[in-house]
Image 1 (cartoon, rainbow, N blue to C red):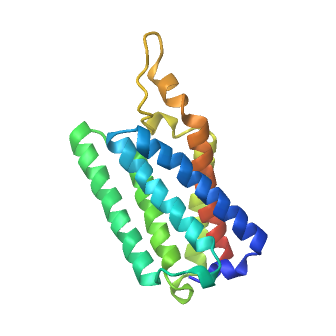
Image 2: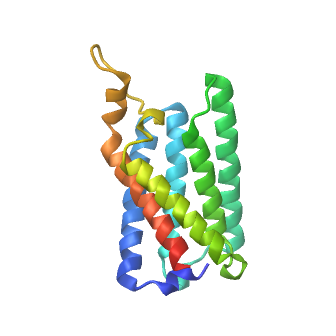
Length: 186
């Protein structure tokens, strides 16, 4: 995982700051929300911290590739288990859990040593993540995101979701961008 050395310092610093901002947005949601929404945001905090770490200079990397790989593999499994549990509990599979599981698996891939990574797979994953970011930017995932805000009398459920969507959408587009750029820089 020495790919951050391929990036100019100013760009690396920009992605570190952006990833930390994403972590802050999701930490706020972890603090204020409950249930599956909280767990979903915990996953994004973990991803954004991992991305900030990957953009650090190689000399600052204190976590081994094995540890990073194991951490994100466990997070991938946790996301799949969460999807199954919430589907059993609520009778519907929220596709956002599948997206999180895939993104966690991409984090596993990015923690692998560079000589084990395939350029073709890296490009395919970058295209996938760019697509995910685009879908978030266009607001197409809003109906699947449970904001935790209950509609008041006269509001529709979609208004309750959209009340928190701009900051959330921006953070998720940024996360997709950070992951996409890292894959392309590798």
